[in-house]
Length: 142
Image (cartoon, rainbow, N blue to C red):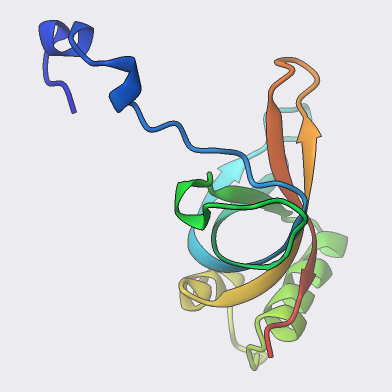
């Protein structure tokens, strides 16, 4: 990685590795990280932004170089109704056993490295027109 402007200007285009967008299909993911953030709107609803790295193709109509695809993020919002969805994600999709004393924060930390199946849909961003992948449904890993 270049350390100064001169090195930056000498980088060859062919040497830059551009990650590809995951195509639509079913993939095995690993939860690599998460972070608490605030939504940038009037309600300022907090959410956890979870990052998933595809580690295997389960079903896809396209050839996929799994090592060169971008990570996929998913937002889990913090509202009374959304908390139920988050708890369901931990129990049903990650197979975690929850205790009444567990906090959502401790569950997110414990979930790092967990595997999950995700159905991916490729979409186009309205503002930029760039493609992106989103996990539209989670499935439990057996």
